[in-house]
View (tube, each protein chain N blue to C red):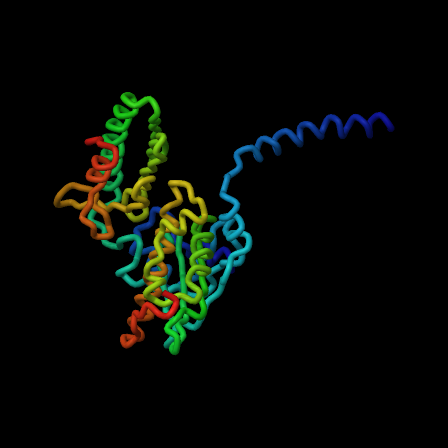
Length: 164
Length: 162
């Protein structure tokens, strides 16, 4: 009785552990900044796309695996972005790129927002070469949101604002 | 319910126009491993064409795309392989549709993107590019309207002609 109790775990344990270790080895090495945004995304959510002061950008293609929706609310008095929300369906880098770009957008004028470049996002998140496309998608989302807002508000000025 | 939604997700390889039609009326669910917090539960509108990152117009059918893109990738691979032989610090690899060139200056990644029938390139010098095939000129042309081709960029940045 005592012997079987001792021998059974010994026989089973190594066989059980070995394959688990083997599957853990090929770890994807996302940069910690990507993981931070992925695990704790900033400004996730959505706004009413019918609001006059909201611009909505939607880019990407479901078939390609990445879809990004980015919304900005522009304060009528200051001309600055007062609220930003995003939802992204895609890889960790795409989620992190859109999360980071929402942080960048807060308080910016439309003209400042339009100057955000994919290189800035890629640099901050230390994206590897194959993931640079994700940062480009985030830049596209910003431009798309601005274009949508300007379409709704033809009178909106692309003023550089007081912060420049 | 969930399985019904899942079956509505456009699968990779389906023509993009069909995928768009589906996406306009159904929820988009994150694939396994995607973040729970970013589920897109509401309906997705067809995107504004001007900033839609992936061109919707296809000039090639999928069989033509498969052949032309593979021809391009292989001839590029040949040329880059030759370049790597001349430059000991350069390494070139082509596997499952992804061509990688690594050197001291950084890494180039060139890959096929079958869902939208494009070729994508990531350059350590000039960043990411997406190319669509132009049947008239028989060139892979930058979809952002710069007029630049895949050939131009490789020649300009690496001095390689293919």
